[in-house]
Image (cartoon, rainbow, N blue to C red; front, side):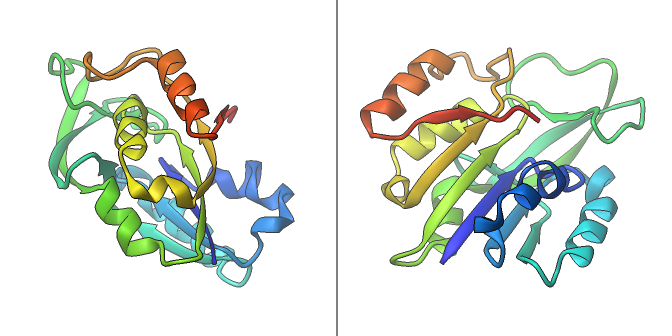
Length: 183
């Protein structure tokens, strides 16, 4: 079984800008992981529209190294694109925060992936990609992952995490390339 994990699904743009032009994903399980309540209605509408083409699972939580509540900072502009998660650092002065639940990456992958399954991972998670990739390197689930696409953000939210180039090097040592997510 093929799984596409869309971490940072936002309003479901991955369907339009990527999945629709890759028929090898037709019929696969698509896991839309999105903690922002601001974009949940458009995401659910997109999932409903595409319910016959994919097996869609909308997950209203974030992914992190460990499960628990985390602050999710929302910009005051009201634009769905102006929301982001912050785990370490100064309190944002330009918006407000909500507490949202995050599921541990290893726990989530153990739940989703069964023997002989494969997964494609897309990460656009506003700085948390460094933590998630570091966690994935230490996971037995890495062997299930056949492709990893990442939008690296300029700021690492946890300074002790390896940077983009170091992560690319470490994944290459495991035979996995980190591709850029261009959307």
